[in-house]
Structure formats: structure tokens, C-alpha cells
Amino acid sequence: IDNFKENITCSFLLSEFNTILREDDDLRHKLEVYEQATNIDSEESLVDLKKDYTLTLLRYWLFIMKLRDICNTNFTTILYFFSEDCRECPMQGFYLSYYKRKEKDKIMVFAIQSDIGLPIVDSLVLNFNITTFPTIIINEKDKYVGLRDKDSLLNILCSHDFSLSFCNGTIVNKTISLPDKYISCLLYTSPSP
Image (cartoon, rainbow, N blue to C red):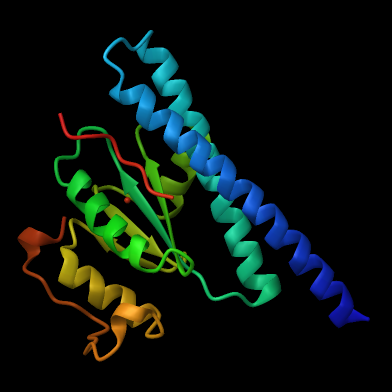
């Protein structure tokens, strides 16, 4: 009976997951179109849309954590914290998008604009002690501060899940040492100015 309940719960969660995924895609598309429009009605409308998108992402993230716990799914979650005025953040978003496209069903990236004025985001920033951007948190455990280039990100991702397709044959070093000057966030980041 417990196995039956678990199967029904997992089926329901997977169904809801697909609904949230569609909502995320719709909001991300609206945000991209709206931000690229030359005649934006008001900055306030754009900020409201960004807030809606961020809340949808966080709902999606919570769902993924529930799926991982209850249904024993194998997702790698990445919370990507960025700020509007961060010069390195668009490049970090680009690298994360690259790996997300390669493993769209296994890597879940949640781009969280930290300076958007949402209490839940402020709580996450405080909880994960985010003080520098970009910062990524993998599987709610490991924190990586500062821009991580494509190769560094490859090593980080493979150290968390060697079954990712791009990890085949990769030599992974769990701890990556970088000089202090290099140690200093469905994915959307604001375009570069």
C-alpha cells in the first residue's frame, strides 16, 4: 500500500511539475519579449513581471526538491544569484545556460535576481549568506562565489553528478583552487547594458 501511495504521489507531483514548467516557460518568454520591447510602458511593470517570474522559479525549485525527496529523482539544482549591476553575471548565466541545454532534464537552474525586492529572495540571500555576485548554490549545499568559467563549471557539475552526459571521461577535482582575485546566481538574466 505504501508503494502504491508513493507511485500516486509521484505521478501527481510529476504532473504538477509539468504545469509549473509550462508556467515558467510562458513567463520567461513574456519577460524576454517585454524587456526587448523599445516602448516599455513603465519600469514598474517590468519589475512586477520579474517578480512574478522569480516567484514562479522559486515555486519550481521547491517542487524539484519535493520530487527529489519523495520520488527519488536525480536532479542537480542550481540556485544562481545575480544582481542587476553585476558585470560578470551575464557571462555566468551564459555558461549555466550552456550546460542546462546539454542536460535539460537533469540540471535545473534557477536564476534569482537578488536585488528585486522580494522578501523570499532576501531570506534566501540571508540563509545562503550571499554577499557577492554571481554566486551559485548546488543542491542546496555547496556554494561557489564569483564567476566560474565553462571548464570550472564543468568540474563543479561533474563533481556533483558524474552521470551527466558531458562528464564522460572528465577528470573531476572536487575542490578547485583559484587565486583569491577570482573568488569574489529555465534561466533568465538581464541583458548586458
